[in-house]
Length: 505
Image (cartoon, rainbow, N blue to C red; front, side, top):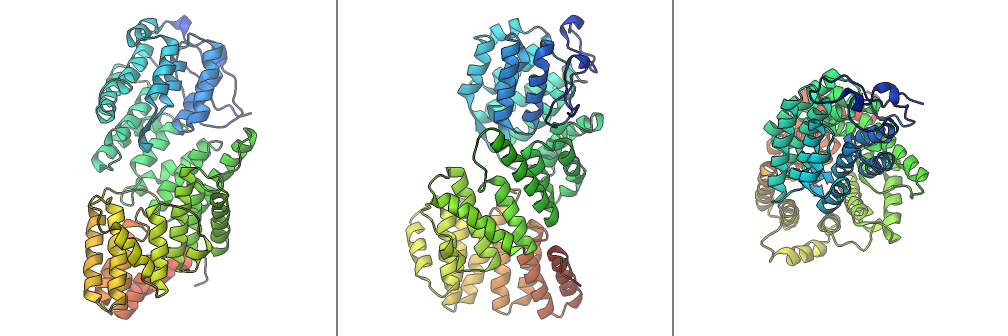
């Protein structure tokens, strides 16, 4: 068994009564390796093991398991203030823009019925502050206002207890959660500045590395998160989300071997846990979607086909939940578009009513010389004035391909330039391309077809700025550079492709 979870009196915390604090010796080892934290608290010794397991799982966004662990701690010690705080924390998913306020308030109410009663009942001022921060997070007002107020409360807690690394870690998370899903680089750098001292003080802290990865999760800053990504995999090998999270940095850097390895680990850890709990295996989810994309980038088409077929079969069975259907649509789109296997759009049909599904069906039909499907889709959306930006990008791409087929190359280029302008104005989204067919890449492909090689070269370079080492954009870059006589650029792009695909030089 791994000695990975322990409580320790490493913090100089004013107002704590020594007899009420549990020492490291009172906590037994955990079977699951999830990381190491030091979190002084007033819970009974017998409740420490499930409580600390819950905090570690919370740091790795394993929310359901964390909530169950905190409830076990409550059963052992019904007056354990932070066990109720912990369960309430599991109902807030700040980076997923999800919050179950009612469930959180119900958990807090089991400790004491009102915010005032909870603060009065908490055995220490510090633990009262933790609970008080949640009364703000789940209080009145809009979620945006509450997120900002909660961040201010966590900042106050850190200032009052500067040696409390858990407060500092959750403060970093509160900063990340204050952006309403908008990726503001300055805010994310503030989160990194809050998380870094925790990592420095405890290199096995799962929250510190997790929040650093989120802070650096874009192609510009990703190299700063590589150390945290490498560390997280070994810190929490028994948390599926921890294994997957490393691939956020790897995707942002185009490290496809690492993307594949990380998501195989994540899938296998998750499915082992599913088997343990009597749940069905996951064949069509977040980890398998990223794994499929990694296989596509490496040119591992047999693996990608198998993963796609497993997901499609699950969706066709009627047992897939809405999230799984969404991942199926994205996987189908990327497989068809990135392999240019237009017949695959017919092989993997299902009853799905999502824009990305129709877009790829229409795109594939256009590429096979049948514009009817694309025209029908465009007619359905032509009267809509409130299309989301990415749907607008898809519409412009289809319009451009129709114009190209009709012989109007200039109109096609104008439409694609409009699509790239929209893309450039959107907040950066991590992971596989949020626009199923990156518009800069399509602009490059159309420009190549029209003999506008200089434009194509620039478009592929811009595409690679958004999606480093993306194989279709590298292929286009090599072709455009060759057409312009830029042999060194073409040779470099082809060498990078060979390395990605493990092909001989």
